[in-house]
Amino acid sequence: MAETGSEVNVMLLLRREWGSVVRVVVGVLVVLALAVPVATQATQPPPGGAPPAQEEFVPVKDLPHQEQLPGGPLVLAAYGFVWAVLLVYLWTIWRRLGKVEREMRALSERLKGQQRRIEGRM
Amino acid sequence: MNRSYPFLVLAAVGLFATAPVLIDLAPYESTMGLVQKIFYYHVPSAMVMFLSALVCGVASALYLFRKNTAADRWASSAAELTVVFGLIVLVTGPLWARKAWGVWWQWDARLTSTLLMWMIFAAYLLVRRFGGPGAEKLAAAMAVFGMANVPFVYVSVNIWRTIHPTTRVVPTLAPGMRGVFWFAVLAFMVLLALLLPLRARLGARREELEELYLMGDEGE
Image (cartoon, rainbow over all chains, first blue to last red; front, side):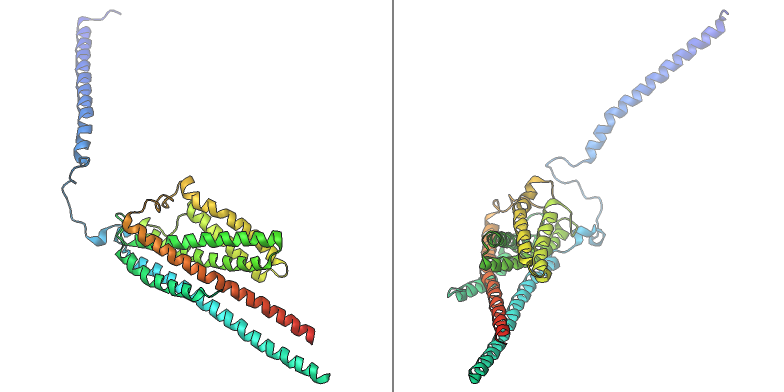
């Protein structure tokens, strides 16, 4: 079926409109592609330069738990534990040695008594 | 134990009395601050733990292959000290880690292998205490395996990925930290030289007591 003159005109008009839409979309994408890296770069601090200006004050209590944890009590706990373990260990050795020495003295006395009884029988 | 023992006692008292002052004067580490000062007791304790584990392993091997009972006495003494100093390492480490890493414990190569080594020597003491007759030989074999762990624990930080500082930290210490660190190491080594013969003497006296009991039984 042959196309009428008015239909051809409409198609040409649509094709021209479509071409301009495509040009606008491509233009917007090019602008975005160029603008995004520039925008993100602007928000990052310059390497090696001064830190960015402070935008808000953060109270210490709002910091993450790790950062507000004081080191002093941990150091004291560590050194206290070392001293406690060493002193307790020394005390246990002294106590065990004392017990063995007492047992040896008692046993020696018993053996001497046995010896005297044997000699008395002879 | 000989005549030098009182001098060793005096040296140990002097070293341990001076060490906290020097540690206090040592410079603060840039990222960890005050909590890094745990290092001056943590690492020397680990060194003493390694050394006593090596003594225990060598003495146990002598007992196993040459039937040397004196070596067995030294082995059991060294095993006890390995457990004591290992406990210090395993407690002071997490106290440091809580601030430096944000966690008490991490199942990484160094921490896990140290815990396993400590458990081997704790098991050694349990076997000797409750193993019954002949347990000394089984315990001695365990000690040899425990000793074999020492080099693996030491290099674990260089081989596997870990958050624990590597073995390069000590040789590259800053001058202000280096002197204090080696002073603390000396204090702990002198302490080991004091405690090891003292504990071995306890073992020797126990053996004498057992012989006396046997004599008493024979006399009755």
